[in-house]
View 1 (cartoon, helix red, strand yellow):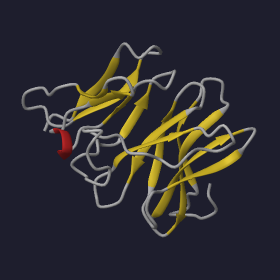
View 2 (cartoon, helix red, strand yellow):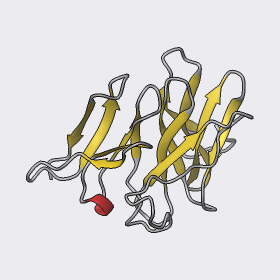
View 3 (tube, helix red, strand yellow):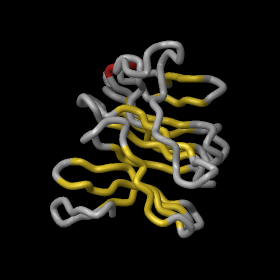
Length: 178
C-alpha cells in the first residue's frame, strides 16, 4: 500500500506480469483518495501519482516488459484515460491522457478518451471503455494510428475492451446491454 487504510484495505492489485516481476493496482492515501501504484522487486512500491491534488488514479494493466501501465485518472467525475511510461532512470513518468484529437486540448474532457483497461504485450496497443466523449464506443489506440473507435452494437449500451492477444491483432470486450 501507500501507507494508509480505507475500510480495512491498504491496496488492491489489478494486473501482474506472467513472470510475477511487476504488479500494478491502487493504494489508498486516506479519506476517499487513492493513487495508481506499481511494484517490482528492484524498485519496490511506486506511487504513480495523479495529475491533480486530491484526485484519484488507478493502474489497471501493464505491458509484458513493465514499460507501459494503463488505467484511469479522476478529476471532474468520469474516469478518463491514464498512461504511465517507465522512466529509464527509475519509476514512471507522470500519466498522460489519450486524446480523441491529438491537436486538441488535453484538458478538454470531450477530447479525452475513457478509462484504459488493457494494453498489448509489447505496449503498442491500449484499449478502453467508451464514454460520453466518443459515443460510448469501446476503443483502441496506438502511437501510429491514434484513436480507433470499435463501433457500437444496436441497443447494446456502452462498450468495453478487456484484453488483447499478445501481438495486439485481436481485441475482446463486451457491451453492457443497456
